[in-house]
Length: 287
Image (cartoon, rainbow, N blue to C red; front, top):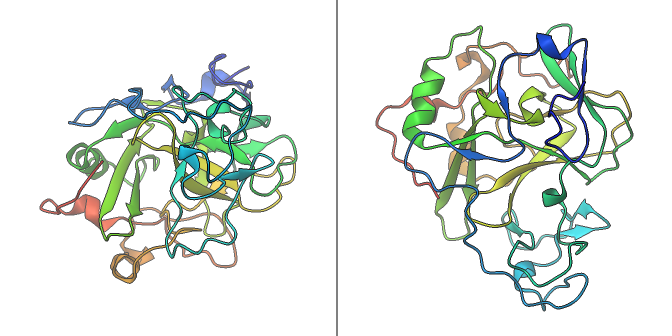
């Protein structure tokens, strides 16, 4: 049976039975949640004027920072910016063709995935086929929240609740920070079934297509074999540049409410803990 109920480009199977999954509304894209946040479905970017089948840097306005993909795989090598390169895909308003090489995440799922029951971590997600390094795997979609609503929801969680809310902080070259809070607890996609690992095989990249609200896209950090569980680092530190003060402010694992069961050699013992979501007077900027 298809977890996505036909809303994804490919069906997502489930084992053992679909009826045993936690109740939630499936959405392949972000939806606006409570709080004063922009509508993630709103088109606010102007498109490129490339009248070719596929865009190329530096002539395409969407590729201001260079090529984003090479043969459908994300380009992560050779960045000389000193910070994580912002990624903008061609969008609805662009003049280029639908098969443009700068349209990857927006095409949706490209590999057969399966939701399955793990032995220690509840539900998980695995691939049913080989995934080459650098390829797009899935999004982490859900309700877009403001800091107040995110803090309210996470403080109501108990040690028995699943970890769903994610805070993505993008540190810009000018010292400012853009924060995005996503909660797929009630409305979300297949990404909600991904488990944390201290040695993950996926890494997350904010991808912008139609607006400043980023799609949280997960890419393969290495070649991934068929039937292998898919994981990422809940803290967001993996494969991302962080300022020194941000790294030092992260709490030690002992502050977390929940144990980690990734069983890797570098396992911290506890799931990542974001102390900022428990500080009532914390000041943040958001997009």
